[in-house]
Each structure stands twice: as structure tokens, then as C-alpha cells.
Image (cartoon, rainbow over all chains, first blue to last red; front, top):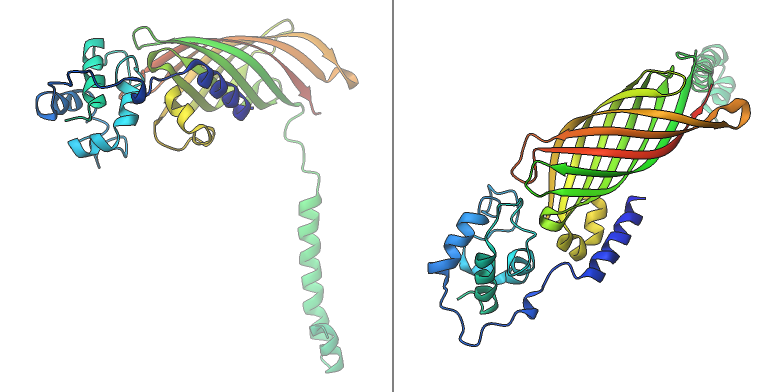
Amino acid sequence: MRALVLVVMVAAVCGACVGTPIGDHPCPPGGTKDTYENFGAGFFEEYCVRCHGGANGYSSRSFTTVDSIRQQKDRIFINAAGDNASMPPGPDGPSQAERNRLADWLACGAP
Amino acid sequence: MSHAVRALHEGAAVPALMKWNRRVACFGWALALLGADPTPAFADVEVGALAGATSYASTWRGDFGGGGTLRAGVRFEHVVAIDFQTWESYATVNKRDNTGLSLGVTGYLPLRSARPYARLFAMHQHEEALVSVENAPMGTVFGIGNGIRHRAGGGLSLGAEIPFAATGSEKRLGWILVADATAQYFPDDALGPHTYVMINFGVGFDYLLK
């Protein structure tokens, strides 16, 4: 029964396009002035590292270095950037402006 | 050649047969224990199940949800039941899929027109964004994989069963409407809300075994 419910749910999800993938959000024409140092590190420290902080976090995915973020930018984008708001857990996550900034930064390759 | 037959040939018939008699006796006792009709501990035993709908709000701001629920259990003397209940639902914050699995004990007041009940349960819940469900649906089915937030908690339901029909041999099969209010509490709120308050409605049956 649970499997049936999930199949229906997944079908509905696929039909409704739950998340916007990074491919749908090109890097702005002028690029981005944001860097890991002036934006990324602070953003991830404030909203992500509590769970995605390595061995002591809730998740096995770690976002503590710019390289690990670059490697996982597709998953990060579809969960947290732009109009995607699946992460972080709860209603008090980043503002829409911060999510838009994250979207641009990731789409430009997380410089 | 078996040990007993070989023993007969070797002239050790009596000790060998005594050993075999003990084995046969033990085997017989084991069969008797397995096949015996145990002394009935309860006069009335019912099995039952229900399916229903749920809607809820949580302690997260702007978090509401809804979905389905299933419950199945065994009730003794019409008064106390051990039961399992699951909820599958969608919640608005983080666009997430919640799967709750609970094991509980329910006490009933077996009145004629309605059976008020209180259910106390322990539960395990998976909370997962639909993005993760879409990414790994089989992982969601089995409760494993990235993006699933596992939480443990408990709760209390207060409600009533309303019997509306009885059918079958000696009217042992009863049909019921069920409504209850449920509160679920999770001590760890890092990955999800502390509390859910929900309303459940359902239809089900109970079948009197004896």
C-alpha cells in the first residue's frame, strides 16, 4: 500500500516539476561578483554546515569546502537555490534574495 | 542401518530401545506442545483494520499537511488493543513527504453506540523533500538514502469508533467509522517540527474471532 501511495506521489511529483534544476538557470551574462570567500563560505556556514558538516553532521554529504560544494552543486541547487526551498529544514531558511544569489553563484561554477 | 537396528544385531537391544523410547517420547511431547490448542486467555479476540484520511498542522510556521492513514491491530475483550498505524502525507514547508510508523496500545470504552478510545504510541518518522523522493523513489519506499530525515517520537490519539453495520456469520464482522484527534511529539527538532496536531477520519472493520 505504501509503495502504491509513493508511486502515485512520485508520478504527481514528476508531473508537477518539484524542483528547478541548475541547467534551467544559466549564469548571468556579466557573471557574478560573489566568491566562496565573500559569499559561499558564510552562506553554507549559516544554513548548511550544522547538518552537512562532515563526521559530526546529520548528513553524510559535507559542504565544508569549496571543492565539495562544486562537486555537489547540482543537488545543492535543486534543494536550496532560486525558487527551490527543500533545504534547509524548516520555515526559517535563507531569504529569497539569498537563494537567488546562491543560484547565480552555483550557476557560474561557484568561483 | 540405523543405530537401533544395529544395536539389536549387536545384542544390546534393551539399552538401545530405551534410548529410542526416550527420543520418541520427547518428539511426541514436542508435537503435542506445537499442536495443542492453548487454553484461551481471552473470551473475545478481534482483529481489525481501518483506512482513512489525515490533515494536520505542525509547530513550524506555515506548515500544514494531509494524506492517508492505515491502522491494523488485535483487540482483547473489546477493551484493549495492540495496534500498528502508519501515515503517509504531504507537508507544505520544504515540500516534504512524511511517513510515520507507529506501534501503540489502545484502550476502548465498549459502549453500544460508540466506542471512545485513547491510543498511546511510539513512532518513527521519515521526513523527506519531494525532490529527494523524485531522485530516489525506491530509497523512499525502504526508508534509506540521502535526504531522508529519521526521527523518533511518540503520541496520543483520542477518538471514537462508531459501529454502523454488522454482517457475516453470527454478525462477527462489524463495520465502523472512526474519528480522532492525534498529537505527535518529537524530542529532536533539528530536522523537523517538535509537534504535529492532526485530525484523522476513517472507515474500517473488526472481526470477532471467538
